[in-house]
Amino acid sequence: MPGEPTTDAEVTFAVSSRSCRRVSKCCGREGGRPSLRPPPRLRITPRIMADSQGELLLLVPTTSYRLDDFRAAALRLGVPLVVGSDRCHKVEDFFGEEKDLLSLDYRQPARAAEQIADAARTRPIRGIVPASDPTAVIAALAAERLGLPHNPPAAARRAANKLAMREALRDAGVAVPAFRAFPLDSDPLTAASEVSFPCVLKPLILSASRGVIRADDPAGFVGAWRRIETLLRDTAPERRAREEGGAASILVESFVAGAELAVEGLLRGGRLEVLAVFDKPDPLDGPFFEETIYVTPSRHPAPLLARVEEVAAAGARALGLVEGPVHAELRLGADGPVVLEIAARSIGGLCSRTLRFGAGLSLEEVLVAHAMGRPLEALRREARASGVMMLPIPRRGVLHGVRGVEAARAVRGVEDVVVTVPEGREVVPLPEGDSYLGFLFARGEAPAAVEAALREAHRRLTFEIRPALPVA
Image 1 (cartoon, rainbow, N blue to C red):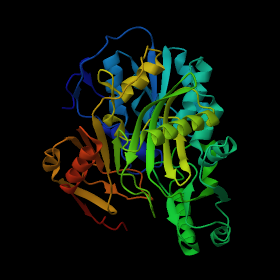
Image 2 (cartoon, rainbow, N blue to C red; image 1 turned 90 degrees about the vertical axis):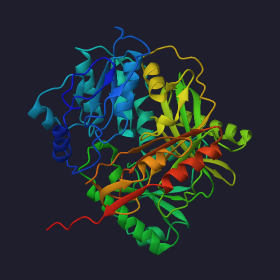
Image 3 (cartoon, rainbow, N blue to C red; image 1 turned 180 degrees about the vertical axis):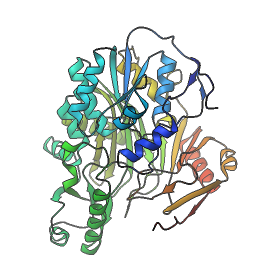
């Protein structure tokens, strides 16, 4: 309960809910999904007592789901944690500074790195972990200043920009879809005459499949263009990096038919260690590309998976990435694996909860240990299959309730049902939306059983979404 004293065996976050409401307002975001609200108290048994080796800086946006799991991981490993967020400085001015929280200007990565370097003069920051694409750039710049292991800033920038990424991969001979960028102020009908169909349009800088739309003909192309144009205009106040310039262009690439996989890895001294390969059993054929189910281990043949891992590693090298987490998305095209994305961060949302390594280490514990220079043996994922389903938003409206949660939890193999959207919040589906209703988690002896459990649990859930009241 709020107001209870915290102990060393509890994970809490000090930012008040009223601070969260103010940050979304003063930074140009009404609503959103503030994961910086006080989370439920989690009972944690520390694996290692705190030491004096220094602090870990976690760079996590206010809209991220990841904070609670990283805090739990740091506590288990006895690592003091500092959170560097894009919380608006006006909140800090109003409420005062908060211990172990840095307010950073995510819009200007170089400025954010300066802020981190300034903070490091009075506190022993010994490792930095980014939790998003923009923070990966900040992490690289800051770690370079502090003399910590890091990706070259130019490599992090390439990974955070879809066009720069594809250019680097293509020039290195890594398979990517045929692509072309158009200025946003171009005539979309003229642009449509210069591409082949089917194709996929996407903004350069948004993530989580926001604004990603398939077009099968010129009319669909123009419609997709206009939606992306509106999305970029409406999200202009977000605290994204100004220097990326990605809001001024649209990327158009060929649609690659085939199954899609995700590769989770860790770079150590330039060598990619693959931690897991996820199947995405639901077809991702468009017109929008909402991801739902991830299941690991993959059910594809071992020789094909070996090739997927080789391509992912080659892609990381082509971008110049050498240290830290990597999350890659690939399609199994007619001629082999094709890279769609390679990010210098770990898997997003709460999806990392599907992964356990060695004697039960979470992915966050692995990343914290790596960043702090702790010894890590070869990381082997648990033998059992596991999976997650990101609960899709079926239509726009206000969430008024969720039924069937206990029935979903009762499905054999299901470990948890987490609804992340509070009642009364407006929800928006892709391609404009940027969140899910929640997550389902399952484990089992085989990937097929995990997938079946997730689908059955989802079938038992009912989300009551009503149209939002008109605003005068």
